[in-house]
Image 1 (cartoon, rainbow, N blue to C red):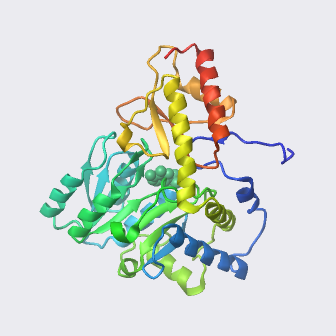
Image 2: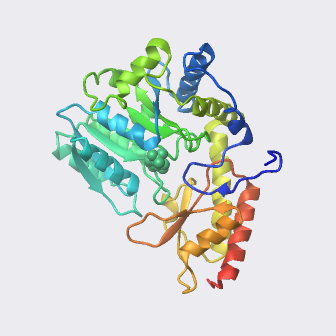
Image 3: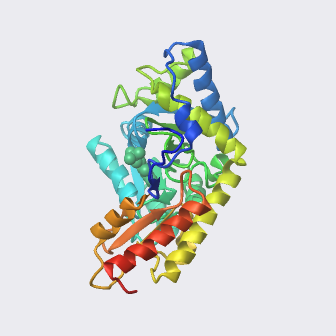
Length: 372
Ligand SMILES: *Cc1c(COP(=O)(O)O)cnc(C)c1O
């Protein structure tokens, strides 16, 4: 296949995402895991991640972990909560649920504070709960709940958690790199994200931005060898290397992706492009008759959930397949109470990609004879 004319389907998904040609090209090499060039690349990636977080490098450190985003979440939950600790997870979607499941499987004492999937996590209830439950040592929250696209109020959550002097864990998987964070002011001890979301790298590893002093105090807590966060940090600090086979190519691609993030104007520039994609998609879909699932104030610009049309001819599988045949990959819903599908706004997607998706949606609806 001649590389100059080839074009893959555009991924309007929550990840893995469409990446630039140059990010993919950065992988066309072989580098040994102990090669000086590779070790310098890892160091630069770690330094740049702290920079993307706008964090103080004397206070925060970046730890890279092999695997998908969930592996890094499991690494944090399994490594930083003391044997007698208790985790409280704020749940309003599938990714909050997943953190509960991880803690349960690891035998960690875990509680949940639930709100419906179309509501932000409950900050007042959290306040009351922490006042009543002195055993909670850690609170976990999802920044952008990718299940719906809802943005949780991490800053407010952080203020409450700090007032009760507990530790805060944030799953910022689908937002980091495109939505600004302020780790120190929000009181975040651990923030988790992955290579193949808003930084626009390829899958293969995830990373944790950790408050170094907090991480250093977790000696002996890890419940896993391969996912031991402190040991991974110590390895990277000692000789700059991963403890076990590193995802070399994914790191080379990620380094290039970080350069491209910087060239786009960092988090502000990337966030602005994603917001334009979101606004354009929303406007076009609404014009076609689709309704977004979330109320406007809770919606982010990462991914949007739309209700299925009620017309009897609408069949999601067929809708999905016909769009995919035309080169656009959308995403099914993951909601427990509503029939929705999702359209992502992240990855290397431009206005022309959104334009082309909207044209296809219109054509596919006509083909299915769906009136909305
Ligand atoms: C994508 C995502 C994850 C991790 O998913 P993986 O498939 O393990 O990479 C976790 N949390 C959120 C909010 C996500 O969007």
